[in-house]
Length: 119
Image 1 (cartoon, one colour):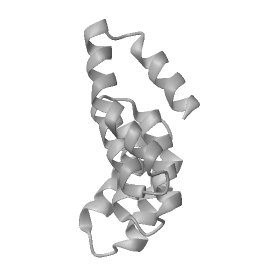
Image 2: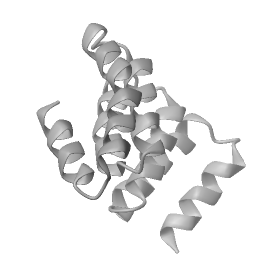
Image 3: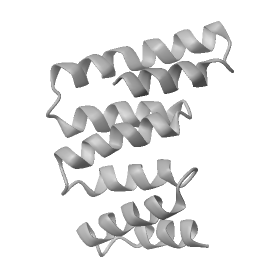
Image 4: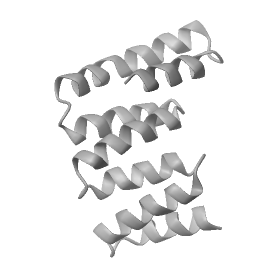
């Protein structure tokens, strides 16, 4: 959690104080939920989605790594992870899409996402 706090602090340098406050308020309850239920992949997934919404993609990816570690059968978590990683690590993004495809081979959008990061 210390790494995520540092990354949020670094990212917040480019935001106005009002924007920083909005992000803090938006993520506070979700971070609290994660701390209260550290074994709940859904809590991590919700927090990661909020980080992604605010463009904190590395914090989102770090959070999603925890989500997939807790629930390796969550295709949704792997897709969210792949989308976050696509901005800074194409190889890992492709691996995450491959995991999601292995879990849900009939979902065409997953193949499109994989193709998009591979091009």
